[in-house]
Length: 235
Image (cartoon, rainbow, N blue to C red; front, top):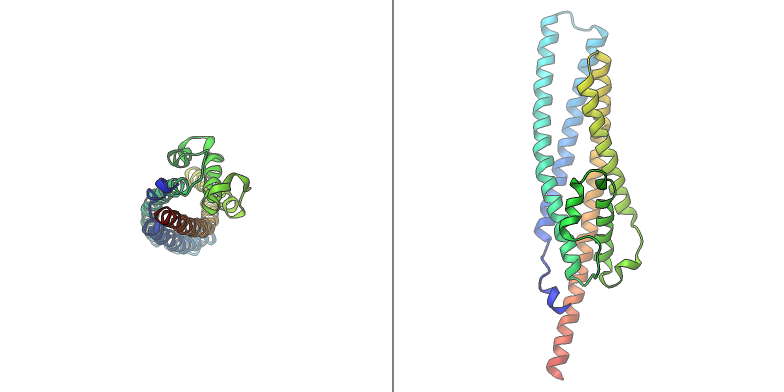
């Protein structure tokens, strides 16, 4: 234990960056919802025949496509950057849990991240890995005695739902031919954005709890190590 504690890597800065990026995700999702609403209004105008000029209808449609493309590009950049940082945070959290004294953890730091990219196994393995990190962070010495945590379960449920909706948005948009198809795709996209906001908040709650738990455990172990050293000196 005394040797491992000095390998513990402070995650304060990394955690702060993940928080910033999750807030960025929420902001971009709100922008996307606003942009989708404008598109929905445009589609409703098309459906109701509000346009008297075909040229104006085409011009507004082109402007809408450009705006949506810009929002999608921004969303992609934020998603990629935040995704990389969150995976880096998970790796660090698993590593630190081990340094705090958690023994015989099922998932290594690498596999706690790697399972996100393996088909089928990605449906439950990352959830189990994150739950293990939660347990080991809150009670390193007796982590295996703890059960599943509701915060981890909610985070994973929202993750699954968000991915399903993301796939649905892509399929609806890819197959859209009639006006009603585009309206349906727009509505599903708006629902997807709402879920993504909920997921971001759930992720924020999760990382904050784990970070605080590891910080407290580190302070406790560090104090115990210091006291042991003092006793050796006195003895």
